[in-house]
Amino acid sequence: MLNKRISLIALGMLSATQVMANDQAESKGFVEDSSLKVLLRNAYINRDKKDGNDDQREWGQAAIGTYTSGFTQGTVGVGVDAFGLYGLRLDRGSHSGGQGIDFFKVGDSGNPAGDLAKAGGAVKFRVSSTVLTYGDQMPALPVLSYDNGRLLPESYTGTLITSKEIKGLELNAGRFTAESRKSAEGHDSGGLKSINVLGGSYQFTEQFKAALYASDVEDVLKKQYVNANYVFPIDKDQSLTLDFNGYRTKLDDSYVHESGATGDDNKIWSLAATFATGAHSFTLAHQRSTGDSNLGYPYGGYQKDQGRIGDGGNTIYLANSYWSDFNAEDERSWQLGYGLDFSTFGVPGLSYNFAYVRGDNITTSTSEGGTEREIFNQFKYVVQSGPAKDLSVKLRSSILRVSQKSSEYNSSGNEVRVFVDYPINIF
Image 1 (cartoon, helix red, strand yellow):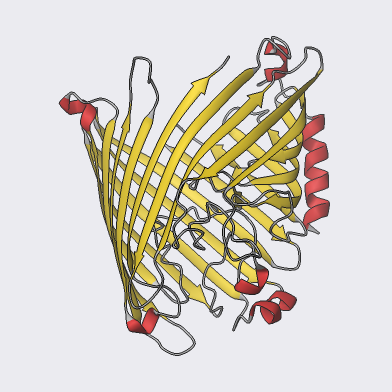
Image 2 (image 1 turned 180 degrees about the vertical axis):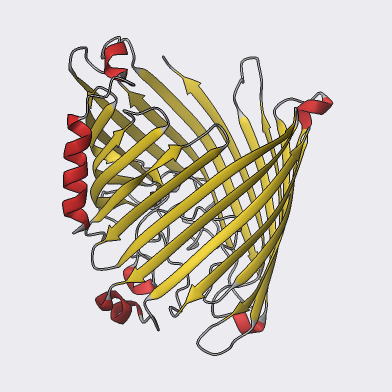
């Protein structure tokens, strides 16, 4: 049924001739609007696990090249997108290749690969302000969001239609039939049969925006997402932002049996209030998971028999997602957060973020009332000028402590991440 609705809406998008927006009329040409960029990334993650669990560590150097063409002129514009990825493993120690970090997939030999390379491409068509893209893509939607938080990004193969015919309104409809794991070569590393996505967002006023999306992962689950975001201006440099995000997932009966889940339903939502004043921001957030599935809120991953579903490693648009996602069965969590922009103090490009999150009421197959807590710190600096302009350095740490009652769901540890990204615009 969802597939049929996607087809009907896609047809409506392509036939739209709204005069409010017509990006195709502004096209300068296939070559004239094209760009080629290379991102050099050095990434390191170290997880010092507690309670007898094995430590994890990965370090790698990546080169991520992306080419984006313009559209040919005329009523129907045609273009292409392409990317090439290469990753080199720098850490050859015994703790590399850890699941969860996933820079380089562990092979049949029991060791991760020394390097990996892959490429992809897509063809795109534009009518007015509606674009149809077919091929290898990196979708960033609340119900299908690729993971770019490791050495190399994930990608998906399929069709996506994005329409912006009406100012403030964006509509998306798509179907993807293959997934490329971020740590492996090839285009079907996750066993994904298909995923259909449908939804959109609308900027009602300058202060208020909302979104509604749905997805159907074949033989796995159906998912719905809702968001409402409102910004209350207080003074020239003060504001209060309320951000609500919620997911509902319903597992297919066959997947419940295959994954060993105890139930098929989960609802999870978060409400965050952020007060910004000058260089400072203060956040208070609450997140709650309910339902009868011991998987809690399921997303991302690659192996279905491990309770993973293959809809992208960033498909968790929730407030309390750091190292832990605080998404266990019945879990309730609270966050206190703080942010600082150092540009006010004469250091543009430098920012700091802190968060303390505590979760309780966790249910596992053996216990109830489990807890976890995380202390998150991050410094980020982006070079503002000179030969290294736009080079960014991100230093991130998390201290995660999980109670014995919650050990089936998560494990304690200390994590450090260091990412150095240097984007180069070739043209």
